[in-house]
Image (tube, rainbow, N blue to C red; front, side, top):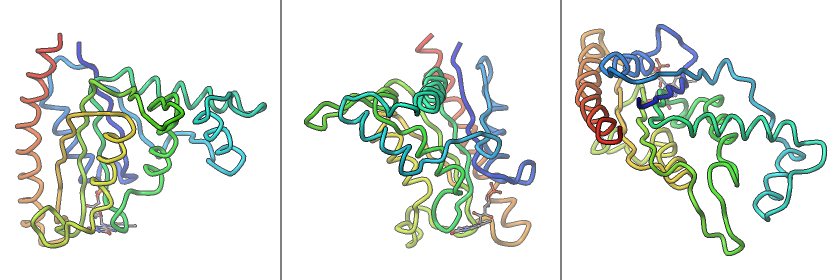
Length: 214
Ligand SMILES: Cc1cc2nc3c(=O)[nH]c(=O)nc-3n(C[C@H](O)[C@H](O)[C@H](O)COP(=O)(O)O)c2cc1C
């Protein structure tokens, strides 16, 4: 049975537009094991200077700094847990054109050498996320979708997509934009319906792909 993990980036709970669309997608997927990771409830380590030293050690093929083994073991367990899922579903609002800081923190935690990828001395990467699919659902007040003339301001889904593809080797990555969420209630309702229709079509696609894998 295919396994899906929903990584929740909005702190707004039931009021979250991005989470509502993600839940709509999950509701349309049958026969999948679903888990939920809320980045606002997670205990993420500080990536301060001392901690980051171990990242450089891993990149150069060395062990993490003495005394930092437990926290790096926890990070590895977190990434291994993620890698146990076939589909990674992210839902997130846009904050100042980018990701909310907790989700950015989560992304910075999981993209680690020997966990997301392995590199050789020449910098060639082997990806650990190959074979996974990602779905990114991004809400935003402004219409910065491709073709809107403001697409160059997207440091939200474009950023997340590049991180997952470049460092984990995840492909395909499906992006669904819930925007603009600033407007009259009727206009926002129309935006929500459009996003829901988009994820309904995507649900069929994911279900078919999962069927082919089983
Ligand atoms: C701190 C903060 C910063 C925001 N910055 C932007 C922004 O740069 N661009 C944008 O389109 N919307 C911005 N918004 C609006 C949210 O992206 C929008 O309300 C979205 O629908 C919220 O999604 P959610 O309901 O899933 O949390 C911002 C909202 C907050 C709280």
